Image (cartoon, rainbow, N blue to C red; front, side, top):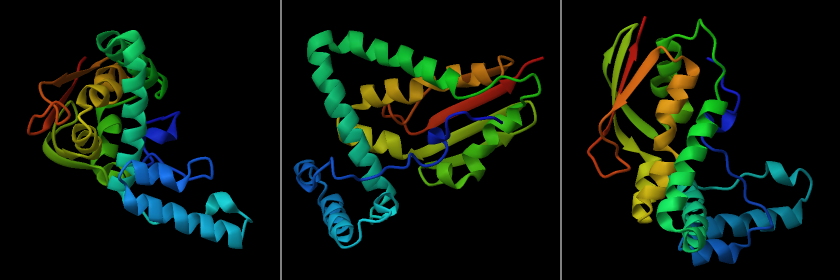
Length: 204
């Protein structure tokens, strides 16, 4: 499977820089991130060489919450000018376009190639809990019972933004990878359901 944009499968690597001051994290209520930023700045003053390789101590949840807060805040502000409904629809269309851009269609692309990373790659396993209900060459049924994106966006009362930015693109992603693969989903964690039920079927 060929992914052109590694950000979708490498845990959304985030970096703290001097352009985002410690107070910004504190204002968001993320005290541990603020402490991490302070540690980062202290280390930077001591040794400015290779500053972009400095590591900070934060959890996946802290990192995703920080990112979700920035996204939600910006979208909420823009929606005041464009209208919430119009902006969410624009987000959905841009998400479809983006998801189509991250894969390259090849006739040999198989269903198994597409779904395997969800339950084998560390980057996905770190942010998703996937139950494999059925897994055949031509038919796959998953239940995602935990999703970090859904958790943080719902905590921020921004599930509509989270859905439009992440969940909505799944069908376009599958279709772009191989239009013979049909994707069916009836519920998502982002919308408040008990799971995301992903069904994939390879057509002839």
